[in-house]
Length: 123
Image (cartoon, one colour):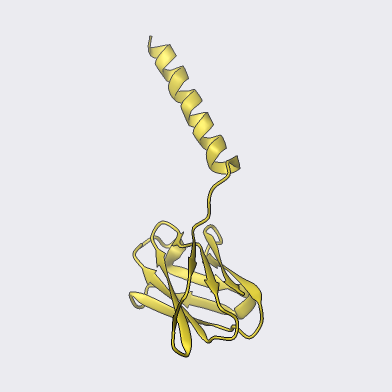
């Protein structure tokens, strides 16, 4: 009986691992809020980035706020390689990153260890 239970648990764990690494995962996307002459978006940092994708309007100055709710060392920094930004999110509860919106493009970002990812899309 105990061998059967161990076998069932093992199969469930193997299926879960395959789903985690190879399964199709939906990506949360959010739009920025336009306030007169600028736009803002907030990304909550808690076990990852939520939403992991933010869409900005081209030509409207933009700020993306990272609301830190996690004390994990990996998520303590956000890095935008294309923008040369490496922001420490632990210095204040909300860290703001200015995003250039002069052209339609994508800016990928990641945690300091490059384990969690997201992107900002300018359309």
